[in-house]
Length: 447
Image (tube, rainbow, N blue to C red):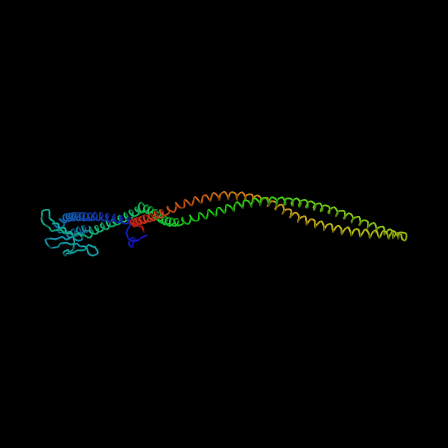
C-alpha cells in the first residue's frame, strides 16, 4: 500500500472542523468583547463624570457656610469626609489662583495636606462656590484617579478573555469528542471493515489467480493421469475380485478348522472327566491303605500282647511267643508298606491334580481358540462381502474418472478466464484501497 511522507502530518476532518468552529467563535467573541469593552469603558466614563459632578456639587454646597464664616476646621473636616471616596485622589479649594485648602493621597494612599498644584493623569472636575448673595467665595477642584476604573476594565477584559478561552476550549472539546464519537468512530469502523474486506479480496483474488494458473497447468496433467487412474482402477478391481475369492476359500478352510477345534475340545473335556475319575479312585485307594495301616497297627499290638502272655506262660508258651513275634513283624512290614503305598498314591494324586490344572488351562485355551476361530470366520465373511462391494464401487469410480476427464477439459478453458478476471479484480481492489487511504487521512487516522 502506498503512503506519502506527509500523509500522517495532515490534520483530519475532526481537527479541521473543530479549528474552523474555534476560529469562527473566537472572531465572534472577540468582536462582542471589543464592543462590550468600548461600551463598558464609555459607561464607566459617563458614570465617573456623573459621580464627579455629584461629588463637586455636594462638596461646593457643603463648603458655602464654612468658607463664608472662615471656619477652617469645619472646611478641613468636610474635605476629609469627601476624601473617604477611594477614587478621589485630591481635593483643592482655591480663591482665585491661591490654594486655601488642599488634601492629597500619598504613596501609601493616606490623606495628607498639600498646598501644591496637582499634576498627573487625573480626571479633574472644578466647581465654583457662591454664597447666598451670589458672592464668589472660591472654587473646589476634585481630582479623580482612573486606576480603579482601569482596574475594573482590566478585570472585565480578563473575564471576557477567560470566558472566550473556556468557551473555545469547551466547544473544541465538545466538537472534537462529538465528532469522534458520532462521526469518526463509526466511519473508522466502516473504513476498518472496508479495509479488511479489500485486503481479504486482494489476497483472495491473488490466490484465485494463482490457483487458476495452477489449475490451467494441472488440467493437462490431470487429463493424462485420468487414463492411468482408469487403468489402475481396472487392475485394482481385478485384484479385489481375487481377494473376494481368496476370502471365500479361507472361509471354507476356517470352517474345517472350527470343526477340528470343536472335536479336540470334546476330547479334552472327556480327558478332563477321566482324570477327575482317576483322582477320585486314588482318594478311595488312599482310604483303603489307611485302613490296612490301622489293621496292621492293631495286629502288631495284639501280637505284642500275645508275646507278653507267652512269656508269662514260661516254657509252655515259648512256641506261641515265636509265632506272636513273627505276626508282629509281619504287621509292622504291612504297616510300613501301607504307608509307602499311601505316600505313593498321594504323590500320584498330586501329579494328577497338577496335570488336571494344566489340562484345564489347555481346555480354556482351546475354548478361546474356538471363539477366535468363530470370530475369524465372521471377519473373513465380512472381508469377502466388503471385497465384492469394493469391486462394485471401483467400477463406478472408474466410470466417474472418465466423466471427470471430460470435465477437466472444460475446466482448462474456464481457468484461463478466471485468472484474467482475478487480475482485473486485484486492480479494482487496489483503487479501492487508495480511496480508503485518502478517507482514513481525511478523518485523522493513519493510513
